[in-house]
Length: 175
Image: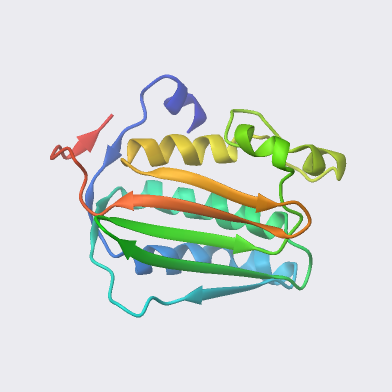
């Protein structure tokens, strides 16, 4: 994936998707990893039914798997992760919130830079390559969306992705 992104050969293929079904699939995929660390994942269902979005389902699952895996990896055992989604205007927002170690404030501007690792994660020798959030950021740009990270060290992190309900471009594939 990293090679395709860096060689500008990464393409997304858009089709209608139910965002809640995509989120549920991603949660189901990481449940064994969460269970092994005794971490509960709570899905907060929105009060209103969210519209289908035009997106690349596999790429979106990759984004969610990365965010959920990070939340599990950096959470304390017996912790909780909350996943929520809501609509605002012409966008869907998905948030993954953990109560883990958080990211130092000075690291936040760089956290989605290729091969960058937060100082506290490196000091605690938590395994990682520093490419996960870079890939998430690149995929989100390809989908016409964005990634935002909010974190307080020793309190937790919220990763928010914004997805357009309908992309600005009407092409079947975006490069």
